[in-house]
Image (cartoon, rainbow, N blue to C red; front, top):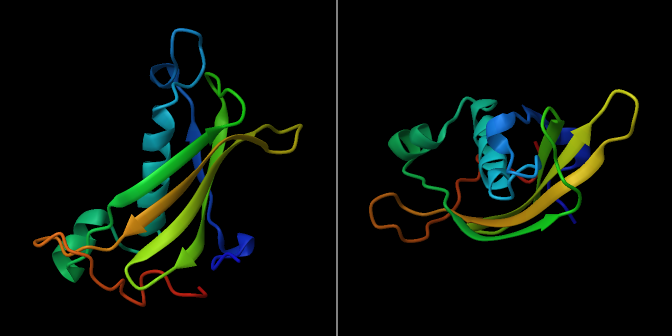
Length: 142
């Protein structure tokens, strides 16, 4: 059961440009890693946080420990993608997050393009050893 419900999800919109595509005109698969990362950073910014602020003010680094991705349909130049993230599980030192990229068109339902499952750990920025996730960072209900 997901900790964050769909009604709590804030979407990050991303427009595909030429530099995101490969020779075939499709979104290059590795670009989804960056798009998903930007979405997670935006999630922090919406909460008046940032990766550097987490380190400087709270002594927290949040590296990705594990990642798996699925590519459902090709993304193309000029596509508008809605990226979401749902916290599926929260443990003492880690969270599991599912992110999806869906193509948005005015005349159609959102179409799933790519998805990823991530395990993000909380570590001390100096020792790089796991540490407890601050309770306020990913509360069980927002």
